[in-house]
Image 1 (tube, rainbow, N blue to C red):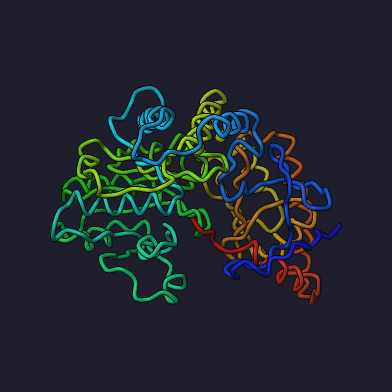
Image 2: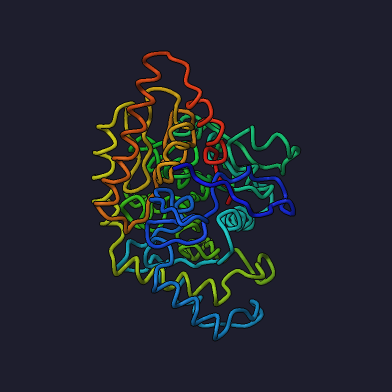
Amino acid sequence: MTAPRSTIDRSALMHNYAEPPVTFVRGDGSVLYDTAGKPYLDFLSGLAVTSLGHAHPVVADAVSEQAHTLSHVSNLFGTTVGPEVAVTLDRLIGGGTERAGGQVFFANSGAEANECAIKLARRWAGPGRFAVVSTWDAFHGRTLATLAATGQKEKQTPFLPLPDGFQHVPFDDIGSMEAACDPNLVAAVLVEPILGEAGVVMPSSDYLGALRQLCTERNILLMVDEIQTGLGRTGRWFGFQHLGVEPDVVTMAKALGNGMPVGACWARAEVAAAFIPGDHGSTFGGQPLAMSAAQATLKVMESEDVPARARLSGARLSGALEKLPGVGSVRGEGLLLAAVLTNEFAVPACSEALEAGLVINAPRADVLRFAPSLLVSDAQIDQAVGILGRILARLVAVSESNTPSSGLESAAAAAVPNGGPSGR
């Protein structure tokens, strides 16, 4: 059954998004439902956002209760929930048991969390040291500053000139980073522990550790962008914890509100102290409605031990994907995985998967990305792999026979909206 095209009038919307192939109206756990009531296994989670699944009752009840109590007063006044969430995040940064000794700024998105980190780095470093070094193929956001930090020229070109003070080096190349990090100019290094939007690209095991040593030696901040990797998805609370690295600044968003717009920038207390009242702010950042969602989300995450679940479910999904036809390798950590295909048919595979009731995406022409709910069941993993296996078997057969396939071409055209990197 083909996924129905939306009949909703979208003419009043700006055309910065492609026409959606399907319109969803309801979600329940790891399942989405479209306007016709058709179910879809959601193995993308709104790009690693709904990590507890859709409409989780604990989060939904918390948001509903807060909406009936107090939704907003502005940061001119105090509220009760945000400080509690900050304490929990500081403890999770420390590994889950003891606080790390940092402080948190709340925003509405990942881009704003990174914007905070960039401004904090400049404030901390003082006059003259303003540059931020990031990596090619990284994705840090779509505001002008975070776009300047994003290492993707095709996204930057339409908006030139971008703000000054940003440099890029190849990912996982410590020699290039050493050459770029002039201690008289550079305030911070901004890096993803795993390149999510580039196709779940893993660094060498010693890369983050070498970055930490370099930044310490040159008095440069190490800022880790955990917007896609953070809060249990990789099998630890944060990706940097796999290697025992201690960052100076950590940014997060996506999973923090399980669908409510919320982001956060954590920094070591002595770094956070560089901000004084008036340096930075956000009208909606830290407001009670978003904080109640974050508080409930974190409570469930801890009670369910989602890092452990991500490790177990990730191993099951990774092992099954490796056995599928057309899959050359699987990379990633926990439940942030990519299947690297033997041919460039990721886009039509996504389109056919959607028609078959499975939501995934293709960040690259030969890469399929998977980020299901951290509460996904074994049965749902097996069902998703079964759907994909049948699709890949057909696409491999078409590829090997070199027989033109109009179905393949039409699937590629239909899947374009499902294929590119996301905004933050």
